[in-house]
Amino acid sequence: MLDAKKRASKAAARDPARTRESLLQAAFEEMHKSGFRGSDLETVLRKVGVTKGAMYHHFDNKEALGHAVVDEVIAPIMREKWQAPLRDAENPIDALIDIVEGTSLEPEHVRCGCPLNNMAQEMSPLDEGFRKRTAKLFADWHVAVATALREGKGRGMVRKDVDPDETATFLIAAYEGYISLAKCFQSASSLKAGGKTLARYLESLRPQSEDRASRGRRAG
Amino acid sequence: MLDAKKRASKAAARDPARTRESLLQAAFEEMHKSGFRGSDLETVLRKVGVTKGAMYHHFDNKEALGHAVVDEVIAPIMREKWQAPLRDAENPIDALIDIVEGTSLEPEHVRCGCPLNNMAQEMSPLDEGFRKRTAKLFADWHVAVATALREGKGRGMVRKDVDPDETATFLIAAYEGYISLAKCFQSASSLKAGGKTLARYLESLRPQSEDRASRGRRAG
DNA sequence: CCGAACATACATACTGGTCGGTATGTTGGA
DNA sequence: TCCAACATACCGACCAGTATGTATGTTCGG
Image 1 (cartoon, rainbow over the protein chains, first blue to last red):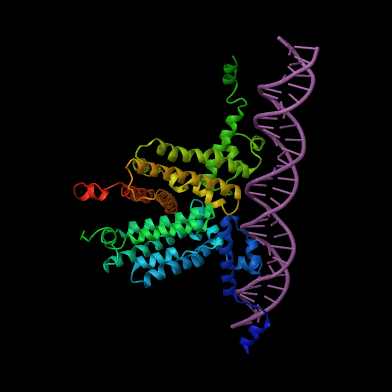
Image 2: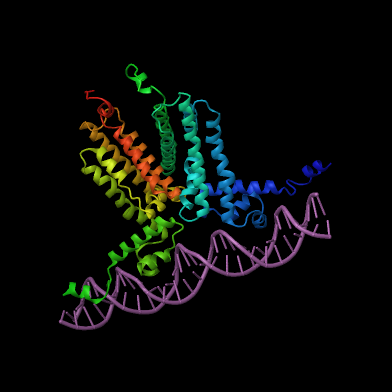
């Protein structure tokens, strides 16, 4: 009875959790396209179909909404794309190649770039709240990659001379750099080429890769 | 007589070229710190010591000022830091290492990041004028690095199996990525570490690097 | 050589749109 | 019946852009 009433009455009768989630998602998309300062709250509200009363009920102000977007939208995206596959994978190099080459090449995504890096670059110098949050996400990302490489070394799937921390930072930096360049050039093909370059770099981290390729074998 | 009069009369009596240059420089600094949209024109004017009449005499609007900043301030910075040393150098790897490790570690610079990348990331999705200009600067940068590597190969200073275009893009992407991370972390030391990683990568592009390091020498 | 006429190079004061934020009213549900 | 969960209407600051005034060089006829 109650369920039926809820379903039948209107589209969504008083579902605050859902309202909040819709606001976050719409705000994320707006901020991803136009940046934090460039995003218009009324555009967000129109997309969701609520008014300012709703949004200022759930969030103190625009800044708080932005912080929540980082914490509750961008962070899960990163965890889903990087942390989860790396945790489940036995071979980190295979997983990393899959992730890197699995990066979306859709024009919209290429045009907009990486939401985490966008937010970090725009807001880090201006708002300490944004800076700390985005820095935390970068740090978590780094830990995930470095840990996977370290454990992969233990399983003999990564060269012994690889420094997990340094390599993780290198990978993240290059990956973000490629996305940034592709965003500016509006070029999916250049992003794809960058992914392939990174994949080759990752291949070079496997044990005995160069021996197998050119000459015999030798222990180092 | 004329010169003396000009010098003696006031601080700066009607020097439009100088006024324009001052506006560009101040606008660059503002935009470097606060981004294009975050920068306040009146702050720029206060810094220069002129009023809106002056600025709207030299520039049609804020957008035109921004475009001029890219063309006449950022472009020369890039040329001075990358193109010029690479053109003069005999060994591109030496030059590239010098450039990368010569990147400023001053807190202000670390905080603000790369002016070219900042502008590109903020404005590329929003303004085609900015996008084309910044893309051109990235392209010129790429050409400079790739050309230097190609010619270095001809002189036997770069490994034969190095792809100049791919390597140039890789270097630029990783370099910008490190600067972006350092900006978010507000960490000069991490930027320095990134520079060292890149320097080691560049060392690996020299012919017979691994032979020289571990054992004797051998032609290959 | 001179000064009227004109263009350049600014200064001052104001406008207007945008947009974040608020004050207040209304409705639904436990 | 009380409070959360919204809607509506409005405010006000910020800031790019404009309208207009003014002073400084420059040109050119006499």
